[in-house]
Length: 156
Image 1: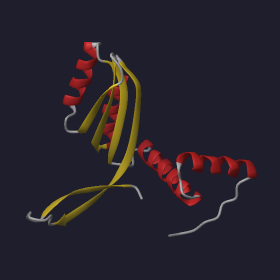
Image 2: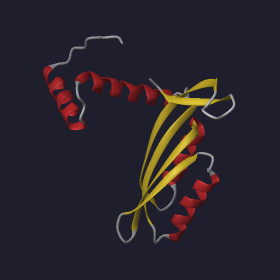
Image 3: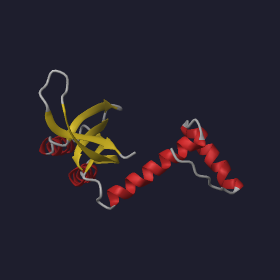
Image 4: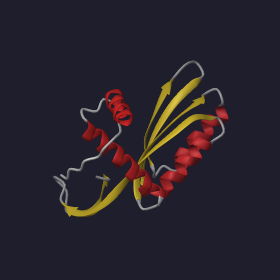
């Protein structure tokens, strides 16, 4: 682990300490590490440097709008190779919140996520992408023969 020192003016230090408390970080170092990871991940995705990613997409829609329901379901089925799971929550008599978890090629995941939140009838769409690094490995899982497959892990 490496250490480095930064200097902050008093106002910025107070704002950062308030941020740390509000978000439940145990110390400044953990908050800085998390902010750096987030920014590096965003830059990696923006520059198309990450080949793989995971994502969560949350959105709200009116379940009485049958065409919206059909569009959401159809799009998910068209991309069944990316959709890991989805969760459906009834907010009230009309509105539902869905969260879809995706995993796959970064470009495909990003395109699917954009299509989903842009669907007519989808409201309050929010996408969170996490770039992954591929670690090829050949090893044996308990009870299985040796195989080569991908292990994907988040950036440091």
